[in-house]
Image (cartoon, helix red, strand yellow):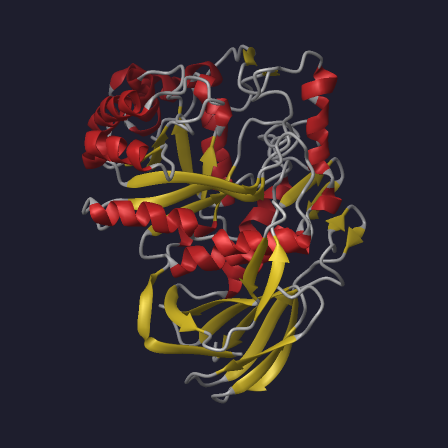
Length: 497
């Protein structure tokens, strides 16, 4: 199979924010995840130092917080200052201590080295409450909420640039869900007030691939928006925790760009593609497991609806299949960098995250190593690439229907700050080596970086590491050079770097 590309056929410059992450007050993501004051591995602010180090290693650019469904009944003022009063979180039906709030999140982001991205309460909250949050974070001294921040020990403003109005407010599962017309008006008034507090902020609003919803939203408030937010979990197993098998995961890779194409088409039809970009600000292959919460018939005992969430922490279900899908989606984001400017893997830690914490340390799941490959070895100028003789295979999707899938997924990049190229190739074949001919002009030494594992079911766990980044020297590049791709692998070839 040939990979053909040209240095003059450039899609665009990829934003580093395509490799963003997400954290929510759900199960062990915050408490016992990034924040664990009683653990000897934590610093003086209670942040796990090993987590900070792992996130810095994948150069996390931006983190979205505090949700997620959690935010739709979250009142930020209860999570700053003293005392912090616990309350019952109606989204996830557990008590929230409010110990970790805005001040802690911004401080944690500074230590990670990433931008904070705050999602506001558009469920039970109001436009005024959202704008008060901007005042607390961003105004130097004006107003009672800026003075509140100063009284809480933070004299300098936080300068939070990225904000979202709401989370999935189109869905019946969400507290404070809204019909399209009502949503467009709320976003308009919220955005108006938030930007009057700080005109420099960038705003997103909850959307989906529904045409009527998006048209109404953009007609009402498009003039205030910089982003349109979409979410997707392909393997919808929130009630079962029964992941799709590897062939079905390959079928999901056929659909990594479906939502992007639909929303891009709408933006183009409305003449907004040069002003509003897509924030794919919550995504993962697997839905989180939280049975009997977002259903009409609620669980009654905690053994029915809280305890099962521990099953999200079964590291054996985060395999090379997850890595393959993640790499294919990152390739899709890169190939659409002309319209997608931000994406946030959900979540970054525990639940379905790429990092798992336990009292003595971390497990870096297969998906973590995908982010490591892309943030450390890929370039930021994305070129178009084709494979005219692409081989395909037939698989059964999660519904048992046959689909034909490309064996390879490809992304070609170069670097804005130096010479060389980086070519990402995902070999989806479960068992077979494949060969790719690099049929383009380049020069210099070639080095390969890859993850694979012994089988599609390979995974990492405590004292059990099967998936990790490996590297090899491949000699000098010549046009037509053939590289051998390992089965079920994610590989990046750097040329002349």
